[in-house]
Image (cartoon, rainbow, N blue to C red; front, side, top):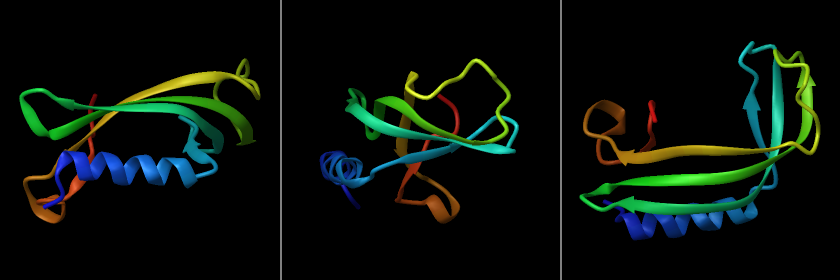
Length: 101
């Protein structure tokens, strides 16, 4: 199984070469494209199989419909989340995006 240090190194390299991050609008009728400008990873001190991430994202495009009309190109948003090693089913022993943060 991949250690948290190996996982962080892999994700850091992936983030460096990923140009844009598309995210669905809450309406599911459009998407927002973001450029990752900065990020950090942190292992939870008492659970070595849980890694938190904070990303600074700059909106570079809006495609389709959006629920919030006040959103505009150039806006900066922060995404806070975590990955954890799964314990059951297909996710067992694999790093997976946390469902609730």
